[in-house]
Structure formats: C-alpha cells, structure tokens
Length: 488
Ligand SMILES: NC(=O)N[C@H]1NC(=O)NC1=O
Ligand SMILES: [Zn+2]
Ligand SMILES: [Zn+2]
Image (cartoon, rainbow, N blue to C red; front, side, top):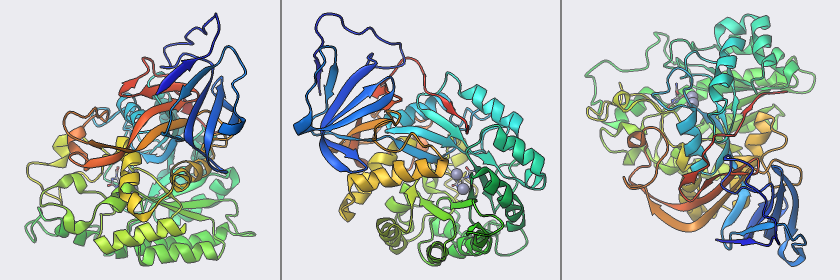
C-alpha cells in the first residue's frame, strides 16, 4: 500500500483518535472498486464521512494540493459488509461477547454495520426501556455502527401499545422465534402472535425476522431421551431437528404473508426468514410465495455453505447451531439457490457463549450451547467456499451489503455510491492465512469458533466506517467512535 500525500505545505491535522487515517478529505484507489454499476479501476473520494465522487482511472486527476491518496493497488474496494444477524449479548451477558469485542471483530472482518439481535443480552430487547439500555451500552463502545432488532414475544404481540412504543423508540424491525429460543426471557411466538403483529409492522413499514422452526410433536421436547443415542455424534443432534421442522414453520408463515400483498390486511409488512438451512422443500415454499407476490426474503449463513454434517467430527460442538448444518447435497443446493437469487442475502448468526457452555470436553451435542461463532470470518469464509462456484465481487456486495441494507432500511449504506456513508472494506482475495493460535482474533472466545484451525482466503486490509479508518492491518483506531443506529 502506498500512502501518497500530495499536499503542499499545511498537512491536515488528525481529526481525532477515531481514525487511523486522520484526514477529513481523501481518496482511496484500486484496480477493483465495486460499485452498483460494476467493478472499475478507479478512485473514491471521501469527505466528512461521505462518498462524494467515484472516478474511473482514466478520468481521475487529483487536482488539489491538499489531497491525501491511499492507493491499494490490486486489492478490492467494496461496500462494508452489513451483518443483519449478530448476537452481541450486551448488556447483561458481556462475558459471552459484548459491544467492544464484537465490533472490533466485525471491523477486523470488513463488517461495517451490525444489526444486533434482541436476545442473549439481558434484558432482551422487547421493550422501549430495554432498547434504551442497549443504546446506552453501545455509546462510545462500538467500532462499527450497530442497529437493533426488537423482540416480538407473546406479551407485546398481544399489546399493540407496547409494540408501538418499542417501534417508536427506534428498533429497525422485529425478530421472533417459533421454537423455544434457549433464553428464558425470550419466549417463542406462534403464528397466531405473528399474525396479530403484522398489521402494526405494516403501518411502521418495518420487517419481521423469524427463526422458522416449529416443534413437530406437541410434548414440547426437542431432545431424545438421555442415553438413547450417542450424544457425541453429530447425526444424533441432526435427527432432533429435521428439515421438516423448518418446512412446517415456513408453511405456517406463508399463509400469513399472503396478507402482505397489495390490498391485504398487512400490506406494507415484510417477512424475512433468518438462517435457512433446508434447501429442499422449505426453500421451494419461499420461492413460490415470492412468485405469488408475497413480501418475503430469506437469508442463509456461511456455516451452512461451508460445512456438511457428514464431516463434523464426533464431539466437536463448535459446529452445533439451530437449525442444524445438514448434508453435503443440501449445501450444494444452498449454493445453487444463492447463485440463482432464491436466497437473498447472507448473515453471520454470530451466536457465542462462554466456552464452558459449549461443553468441548464432553462433546455432548444435545446439551451444548447452540450457536456458531464467526463474526470476524464471514468475508473470507464466503469467499473461500464460494470461489469454486465462481462467485463475483458484485454478488458478494449484493448478498452482504446491498440487500441487507434494504432489509434494515439503511438508505445511506450498502453501496459505494455518491452521497452514501463511506462504509468500506478493502481486502485481498488472493492472500491466504491460517486461523491458528497466532492469528489475531478479536471475538471474545476464539476457541469456540468453528473456523479456527482452517485456512481461509481473503484478507481484510482496511475497514472504514463513516470515513473513519477503524481497522488497518491488525490494528484498531484507539477510540470507538461508531454509532448506534435508531430508526428515524
Ligand atoms: N439464542 C440463540 O442465539 N440462538 C441461536 N443459536 C443458534 O444456533 N440458532 C439460534 O437461533
Ligand atoms: Zn435463530
Ligand atoms: Zn440468531
């Protein structure tokens, strides 16, 4: 990387400790700048946190004596990743993750905006008061911007006023579970609760995100009898959460999304299925609903695209998540669906816990905490496992920036476009690295990440949030100056 200072006599003073590049006005350039109009060789001009021009190489003449230029050569300049599904557990369970460690990991991984899930923190974000605690906890402690989903739970689903207060307080949308969430103060909602909430969400034009699995028998049990099977075998866990659980949930949901069509009782509402794992019937149901004009989207996560059930070693509970990672053939179908556009976007579902809860010594898949820890690695993981399918930089930008921005209603993020906030990742697709104990990992508990021990391609060089260089080659800015995002 060449830092060329073209200024004459008065260097601009550092704006603050918020940025490792202390300039208010500068250009970044490379041979691969990913814009909504394609990838160009050129430069992006950034001033006061915004993108103010984008120029192809042949038309680019730096005409100011006072301009700083960072030339990244062959590296890729892309919109920063927007992760619409992360559990940062702050306040209340900061021993699991927390805003400082989680957002440092995000910055190191090229993620410039996170939308925090309403559960795993304490309290859960199910009321105006709880959202205020979240915002307080985030202020001055986040290295990337953080928005918040609110929780839809039976209590507020049945009480329009409390739901309105939560929405008025600025959550970007709501999230609910159709199975027990594993968190006591975040009870599950049935499709009847969801049906009740949709007209309110329609009025506010904010989405509902749903964890779509339902219990198939009605005894409320997810797990087989103790000792019935070998709990160290991943296949035992897989049997407890068959694809039919996703299918049944989505079947219920698409009877509701009918009402999101023009003239329906929930016109203006939008339903988003989080972390789809079943690429067979569940996916077809979503595809058909889209074709009928329902307002519905779906995400999957890198772990469903990277790993296959057959390959998960006995006792390696780092791979436990819900819905579960399925067979290799299912993984291929997920890639097909992503490449076809039937899956709209990707998210991390970064869901850490303290290592003790992963029961790594016992390796009991039935009792261990379910959740994959991945936040810092989603860019290289998507790239590493996607390269053989010929994925493009434009597709990465669509799955990880443009579509997520649209879902979360972030109108000035998600693309390298004039007027947008300068949220940018610069990365090197051909550089490989080993995720070993010497690698600088910023998530709180590296030992529980399913990616540790693997070799990945796609190294993040630099991450800009609102024009601040918050991460550069292993180092973070000294102050956490990114912002909580509230719906306005
Ligand atoms: N509570 C929580 O984070 N649950 C998440 N973990 C997981 O693997 N799936 C989830 O929904
Ligand atoms: Zn979930
Ligand atoms: Zn989740």
